[in-house]
Amino acid sequence: MAEKVGDLSGDEREQRVAELKRKMQEAAHKKAQAAPAEQKPVAATVAAPVAASAPVAVAVAEAPVAVATVAEPAADIVTPVDSPVAAVATPTAAVAQPTAAPRPPAARTEAVAAPVEVEGKGINRREFLTYAWGAALGLLTLEAGVGTFMFLYPRFRAGEFGGDFIQDTNKFGDKDAAPNPEPSGKFWQVTTAEGQHKALYMVCVHLGCLYKWVPANNRFECPCHGSKYTHDGFYIEGPATRSLDTFEVTDEGDKVVVHTGKKIVGAPASESPARAPTV
Ligand code: FES
Image 1 (cartoon, rainbow, N blue to C red):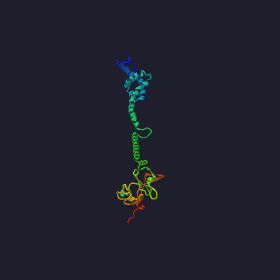
Image 2 (spheres, rainbow, N blue to C red):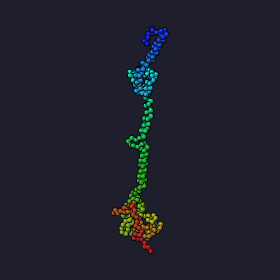
Image 3 (cartoon, rainbow, N blue to C red):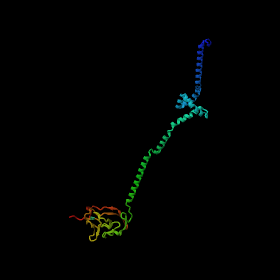
Image 4 (tube, helix red, strand yellow):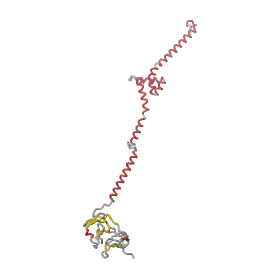
């Protein structure tokens, strides 16, 4: 290089000049290629925040050609906004939206599941309905039971069989008087040899026939199987196994109250004072 061009021969001078031209053209070509690269710092400045917020922007930054393509619309967006960072953040958010889009279905699932729970009870709708039906059925059964009991429970009024009969004392007569029937109360009114007022139930204690007073024999006789009872209702003979049943009576001065709801079972036939002697 220390040689001067003027010292070279004709061919060497031409080669040297051609070499210098070629180097100058290469230098000019490199400079021309380097010219677009001078914009690189600008693109890098814009791409840097994008890369920090979105992986997509990183891919763009690694490809210079793609940066030029993306940077131009980004510059258009930047125009109304003073800060390029904000301009880049806008498309980034647009890219992020599809990721958040599936959330609404999840919210609907929670909204459907929420009514199933009954707040503060700790039971679900099915259990609540089961308990409600059980309680309603139990209440209905209870009401039906009470209604049936009240319908079947015997209620007697005074003057009706099963209730109280207020009779004059003279209806019982004296100890020698014939028994006096009271059909509505289903009892015979008698006065015993001891002067006690008795109300004899009209139904035979054998099998339930209605016995009759036979004045000729001065006793009661049952037409069904022949059981016989005294004027005071004691067993004499026949298939019956006890004396006649009676109703409870209360002496109230000139009145005798017969309680037809309170029956007194007759004493066994073996204890009857009028029992016929066996042969
Ligand atoms: Fe009176 Fe049989 S029913 S004796």
